[in-house]
Image 1 (tube, rainbow, N blue to C red):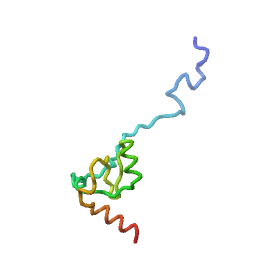
Image 2: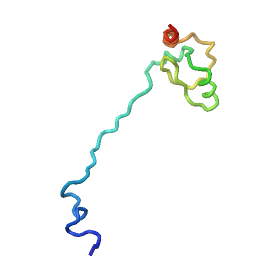
Image 3: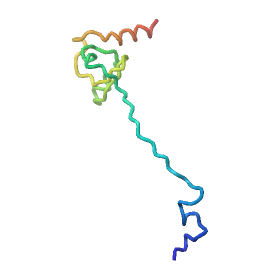
Image 4: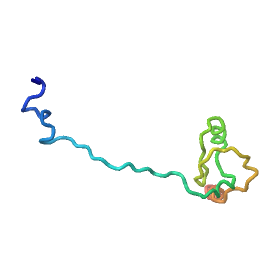
Length: 94
């Protein structure tokens, strides 16, 4: 005989009476990266120098003004400036 649960105890019949239930909801994954079809890889993007230096030390990706996310590995002087980054940068100082 269980001394902790008796017939008057609500825990003895958990399906009856008021209680707590769990609502299940589907897991939704949000996509944070833009699809640029590779075009953004042909440009040099605007990112703060501090973020670039941190990325070189840690290997963590950086986020450009235009939203491009990547780990910098190439010399940006070899590429034209991203038109979206340039436009956003110019709008910041109007």
